[in-house]
Length: 152
Image (cartoon, rainbow, N blue to C red; front, side, top):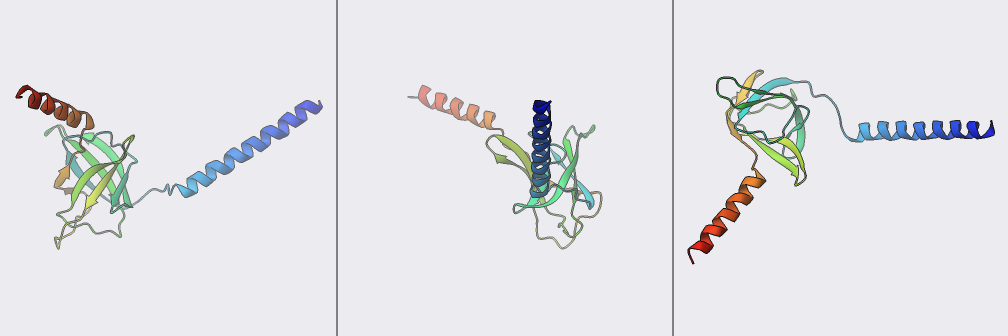
């Protein structure tokens, strides 16, 4: 009987500590839904970008990727995002998919242009750049090195 009381108390302490860490990580991770206006951008490849990833300008989160779909006419990946309503993006804004680190993790980086007009709800970003594929770059480098050695 004495042993089961100790195990019960210890289990309660473990659950309390786990709940504390869950609450702490939720508050410090800045996980919040960004409600704002919807815009989209078309990419030839998204390289692992998915719904829920951040949309940033200069490293500051201004929105969230809400969905990634395939355009049935152009066969391009269409990325839908929700942008903070306080941020007015010029119509010549560029979108670039970037890596958080070498191990993965993607985010959508926006580079505002200088146009006077702003994107509106359901607007589309015209200038996009797909992420660089590390495997393709390494393959091209190795292939170019082999061709360079064949000439000697």
